[in-house]
Length: 114
Image (cartoon, rainbow, N blue to C red; front, side, top):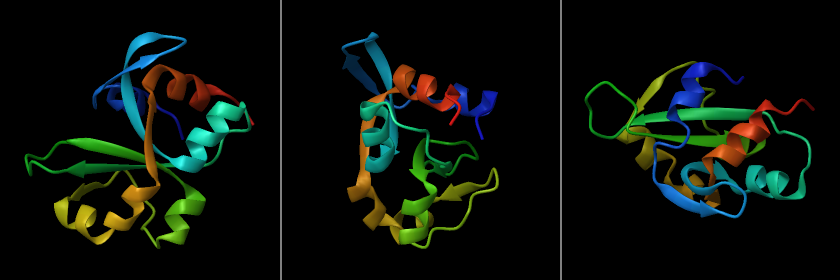
């Protein structure tokens, strides 16, 4: 579910040049989410995985994965949980199913109703 904490993280993970928004931050999303955004399709159920790579108690990076991709890789359902680098190592295969998208486009997509 979209909330202000999600919005604070989106776009703080790199930069991209978007045809719509120009220079923008990026969001790491599963390819099915990106495909749905491009097609203008319905919004998928999105899960957010916050990873504390620096082990300082805060999210270093966040990944946004559809529920179906999470199920395919048997990922746990996050509950505002901060995962450590062991999580990233255990679920490394899912990273082949991630891509980057414009953070502003992703935020707009998340605000859509199905």
